[in-house]
Length: 89
Image (tube, rainbow, N blue to C red; front, top):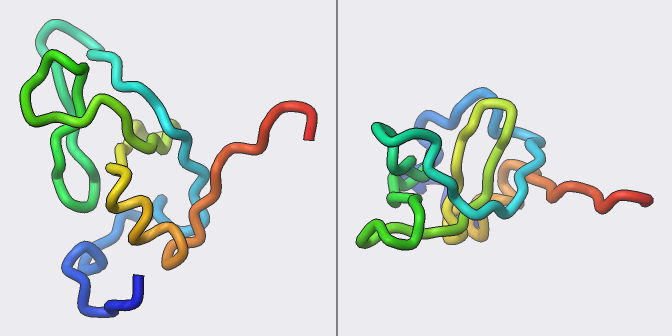
């Protein structure tokens, strides 16, 4: 990500710097709550039966914030994001 004018950087959440995110398959939390959105671009993230939604995305678990794969690829270096360390390392 080389564009300092990228609109996704206008108001980043407080957790975004040096966060650890894990690629996760979305599971609907309740009957009334069937999707979430990417924190940065608002892409819908939901189970596979929901139209126009991504079934997998990056999750910042402490605050249940989702980041779509495109935003992760574009912003990971800027925010110094990390992936979880595999067990035993």
